Image (cartoon, rainbow, N blue to C red):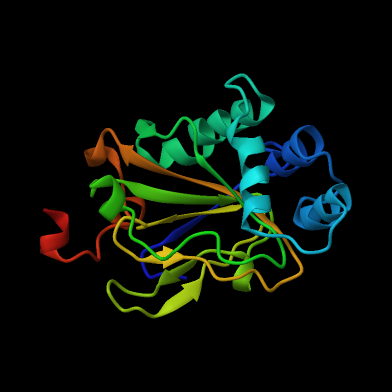
Length: 211
C-alpha cells in the first residue's frame, strides 16, 4: 500500500453495502459476478464501456432516502468521522463505480486536484467487492513517480489516501470479477483535533504542493 495511506476496517453485517446493492439495486446473488447477470439480461457475451456506465447510473440515481444512503451516512458518522474529531465535510453523493469483468479502462490516469483545484481533501475508496489486480484502481507509489500499483482491498475495508496529487486510473479488467465501489473526498472541520496517523495522509506532499 501507499506509505501514508490508511486502511479502515468495518463490520459488513452492521454496514451491509454489498447486501443492499445486490438485493435492492442490481438484483443479483453475487455482486462480483454482476457481469454474468448483465450478459444474460442483454443476450450478448461481449460487454463494453457503456455497460459499466449504465450500471453505474443505476447506483448514482438512487434517491436520497434509499437504504444505501442510510447505510452510507451511518458509516461516515460511526466509522470515518470519529477519526477526524467527529466533524468532517464530505460528499453526500459519492461517485459510484462499476468495472465489469472483461471490459476496458473506465478511468484515464489523472490527479483529482487538477480537476477540482482542491488541495485540502482526503480521498476515501470504499469498495463493495474484493478489489485487486486489474479490477481495482491503480495509483502512483510516490508523487510524480509514474510507477503504479493496484489498490488491493477486501470487502469490509476502505482506503484513505491522497488522490488529489497522486495520479491514479484503471486498466482493462482482465480478472473474472466485477468491481462495484464508490469513492468520495472529505475534509476535517477541526484539523487540530485529528491525531496521527489520521492527520498524516497528506504529509508526504512537497511544500509547493501544499500552497
